[in-house]
Length: 258
Image 1 (cartoon, rainbow, N blue to C red):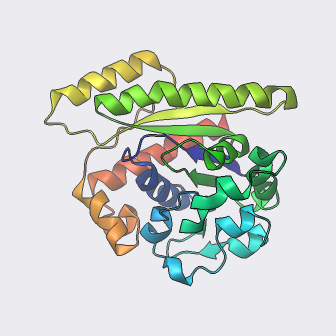
Image 2 (spheres, rainbow, N blue to C red; image 1 turned 90 degrees about the vertical axis):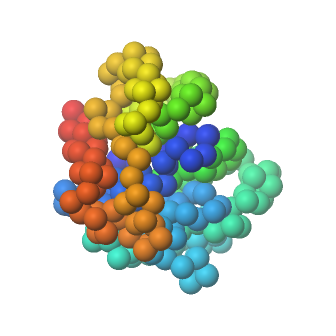
């Protein structure tokens, strides 16, 4: 059964979409079948993996409002063994559209259950906000990767994200469902700036067993890849960024095996 992992942090610009695409590609290289679910109305993961938004007639929005089957929203990508459920700007109205729906936080979980057996990992690229979409992502997930940029304000947002995860876990406990922290992923490290290493030390002290060993450094290759609609493994396989995401994939696979 596929493991569902939300990639979430309410702060923007910390590397959520970059991680979703490149971790997915790295896991796929390890013979894992991947579904990427784009939950952000900006649809950056959709674009970054090579799909044109205007060509996606069925998106996550249509699935969430019950207009289309989740199977109809799955598209193949140029990346081997990676499918995607694309996003659209229509997701911006989802809070309003679902306002009178009972148990709406479980909608995504129910729909993913229908296709979960077809994948080894389902990665949820979450928007930088709290609301019905992030609630659905967390209630649907088994665990959460929290990307944290190596700068102060991103570190400060980490505690808020952890509190949110704990709140959701409280609701899942009576149903014998778990939501754990897969790991805190340190991103965008500028190795010329000593302050970034201070943030690393603080995060590692706060989460000594939940901070990934892999750290994602700042990289022009990571900036260029989504412009080409590809993962960094395709555009610069031997780059440091590619090696880092491949190392992260191995950590994720080891966690699943435990």
